[in-house]
Image (tube, rainbow over all chains, first blue to last red; front, side, top):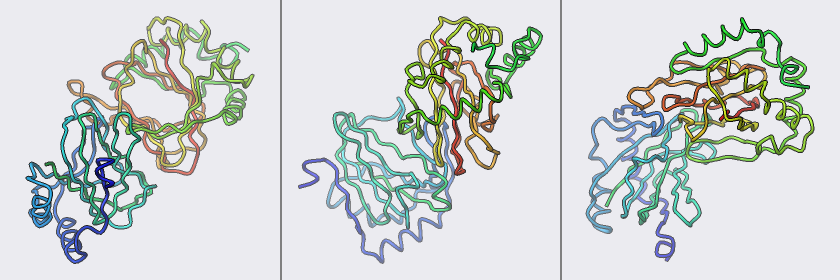
Length: 162
Length: 205
């Protein structure tokens, strides 16, 4: 019902705990490289797209539909994304899955959806939670700057484009 | 008071102005200058005390998170209003013009900003129609490099900012000016301290 009305929904404790912990362990061990275009974004991405999220992908394909692309990004202190003119503005369904522990809204790093004529929608990273959104053409999203209160904490977002 | 009575007089001497102009034009990665001990010390102290009484509004977007007043032209505080009037004056425009070589239409934006702990302004170029020179007068006390809050300048390659090549900690009573262009990429690094980083700034058009 909530999804039908708002075109966005958050689901917590999504994977079975054992599977989530396994996925988290595997992903946090993998090597990343830092990407930065100062006026657009700053985050780390995985050198090789791991196939550890295959189980999740298979499940999403079963319940939602064919996944076109998967992106995995890691954010820590001083990382961010900025809205800019080169951003692709595509209508479509998207899923964001979070991997992290003990993240707090005050650290920044919240995923913010900006939609015309609607209030911004904030999602604070929460491990093993998932956001499903039906993006309109004018929906844009950014990840708030991660401030020093985050310390050594970091979070991973797995983005599935349908 | 007039502008000339607010600032340290050495900056108004012709010989000094010629030196400052050279420094401004030669600065990398784009023309800029920082002038230390700009205002007379008692003026700077009084200004900070009065600025603290202004109403600061929360400004937050993908690009920034800090607090800012409305344009000080509309301030109801007599000292602040007079200060704004003294800068919105041919003496200040002439001073900036002699250093930067720019001619102005006579429009001045001026507001106060407050960067509390965790506040930031991510990289951007400031370009907007009419803006020629950006200026910042720092009223922050006791900031050192480890406190963050630095004004950082980026070099750029083919119009894309590349990396920080210069940093200025917000030094008490220093005036920083830079030429606004498609190359003037800069940021205010996060305030890592618990100190309040006050400044007055804006643009000359």
